[in-house]
Image (tube, rainbow, N blue to C red; front, side, top):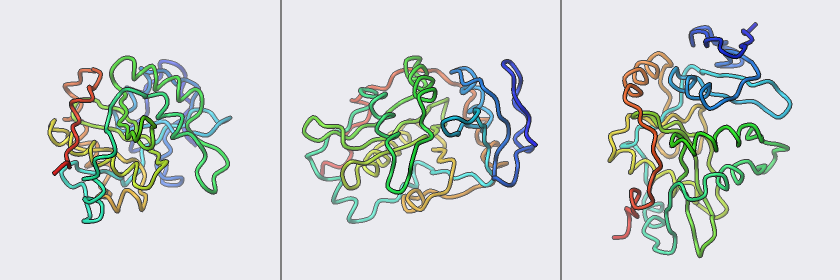
Length: 234
C-alpha cells in the first residue's frame, strides 16, 4: 500500500517507494505548482493517466543524462549542421506540451492531461518550466519541455514531427546546460531513445545525493532564445 496525501501532507521518504511498480511512492489529488516543485526537490515526479489520482514516483535506478556526455553520431552531426532549422526557447511552451500530449503510434491516450498542462504552464509563467523548440519555415516541428531548479534539469517529454526533431532539441539543451554548469538532466525512466543519446542509469541514492547539492540555489527565470545558439553552424 502507498500513502494517500492530503493537501499540506509531506511526501514520504523516497526509500519507501515500491519496487513493483518501480518507484510508486504516493497518491493524492493535489497537483499545484508548489506541490510539483516540492516533489522535484526531493527526487519525486508526478505521472498518472486520465481518470487516475495524482501518482508520485521515485524509481530506482534513475535514468539520467550528464550534459557533457550527450552522444552525437557522425550522421547526427551532419543533421545538426543543417542551417534550415531554428532553435528557440520559451516561445511556445504550451504548444510544445500539447504536441507532446498527442498520442504516439500504438498508444490510445496520454499522461499529459489537462491538469498537467495547466500546472506546468503555471510553472512556466513563474520561470521554472522551459521549452526548447525546433522550427522550420515558421512551423514547430520538434521540441521538449521540462523543469530547471538550481543546477538540475528535469526532462518531461519531447516530440518530433520531422525526423530527428527531438534529438536536435535535446542536443542543444545539453550543450546549453553544460555551459551553465548544470549537473544532470533527469530522464526519469529508461528508454532506448535516451540510452542512444548517452543516457544511463544510476542508483536512486546517488541521484538524490547529487540532487541535494544541485537545487540549493534556485532562481526561476525565463530563458531567452539567444541563450541557446545554433552550436553546429560550422
